[in-house]
Amino acid sequence: MVDFTLTDEQKDLRELAHNFAEKDMRSVAWEYDKDGGWPEDVIKKAWEVGLMNTHIPEAYGGPGLDYLSGCLIEEEMGWGCSGIGTSLMANGLASAPVTIGGSEETKKKYLGMLCEEPKLASFGLTEPDAGSDVSGMKTRAVKQGDKYVLNGSKCFITNGTYADYFTVFAKTDPEAGHRGISAFVVDADADGVTVDKKEDKMGQRASNTATISFNDVEVPAENLLAEENKGFKLAMMTLDRTRPGVSAMAVGIGRAATEYATDYSKERVQFGVPIAMHQAIQFMIADMATKVEAARLLVWSSAVMLDQGVRNSKVSSMAKRFAADSAMEITVDAVQVYGGYGFIKEYPVEKLMRDAKIMQLYEGTSQIQRLVIAKEVLLPRQAEEPTPEAEAKAKASEESQSEQAAATV
Ligand SMILES: Cc1cc2nc3c(=O)[nH]c(=O)nc-3n(C[C@H](O)[C@H](O)[C@H](O)COP(=O)(O)OP(=O)(O)OC[C@H]3O[C@@H](n4cnc5c(N)ncnc54)[C@H](O)[C@@H]3O)c2cc1C
Image (cartoon, rainbow, N blue to C red):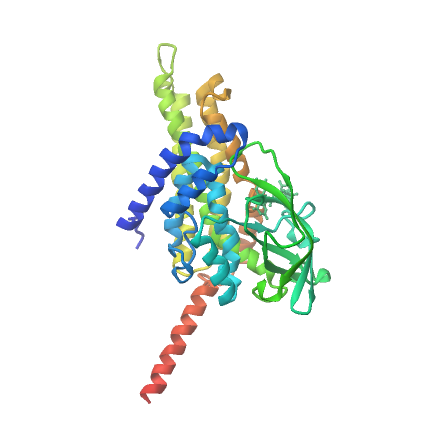
């Protein structure tokens, strides 16, 4: 049975996020966009009202929300301002490897930290010479006794300037390609960590993007996430879990652009009628609205799969590819509906067009999503393969059943 009915809790959460997006994000979004400032006040408030760190399990101080609920929030953040939204949601990307691969102590410390105070974490995978192909990364981690020593540089790191810790991917076996990568939690105040450069961006200017360097940074061995040389798998598992949310943000951008274009088309009069009366404009708006709905369905589907414990690599890549490309197409069309005014900064849609572009680039470009989808279509894995979390849950339940059975015998 297919049922898209949200629970009362999910509806309340969406309303909370929508009100926040309207009052606390949109009201300042164009100012932050203009000067590329850091929206610290908005971040603090979002943290206070519970719109950050939504997937951190209750055991470590978070609300432990399901993935679909997270997507409802992220769509509203994209609708409000995806630049500020990216700053708010980056903790989700950075903390996922800790949730999946951290020891109990690491989870308590680094997930707990984000829930106790409005602190930030960043995800450090990309390097100047290793973007889509992360196996080309040069950052090295060398084990020395009870610590690893890290050297290298990560670029385009969201919230990098303000992060309290980084989840950093580095080569522990340089000859082994993607099988030689490991992941670590690195404190931002560790000796040898430096913020080198803040990027000046086309869009999402309220998000911070920085280059971070690691020079002989000593990382305690217990900060290794998962096993040594399993970092690539951990990064891919992380992206499976974050793609629904980032795609939801793209849906929010597309929805905002569709709404602005619709309203404008009813007000703007040319040839004696509102331009909404011209079929060419109607068709553009029809296509925009259709893309928003279709993208949202893919996003929800990819999130619900995770909530049901089913691996979602293919569908989450489809969601990211389609929602990002749709956001770009919709915002370009929204500028077209506005005509010359669409090109002017005083009107809202040019910002949306600039913001939408990054959705096709970060967390895997649209081309890379197509590679993932094609691989999954051409070489399908076992249908409805369970996620490791679901497998662990099933194993724990099996074990407890056998213990109970043994106790009965
Ligand atoms: C604002 C911003 C924020 C970001 N935040 C983070 C972050 O927090 N953490 C982080 O680790 N990274 C982050 N990134 C990095 C982002 O994920 C990368 O930019 C992205 O993965 C692409 O890598 P690249 O820029 O090196 O492009 P490249 O990999 O050099 O790609 C260039 C072009 O070639 C295409 N291409 C590459 N390989 C193939 C192929 N095999 N087949 C077909 N086409 C291909 C790409 O699609 C693209 O069009 C961020 C980037 C930006 C701009």
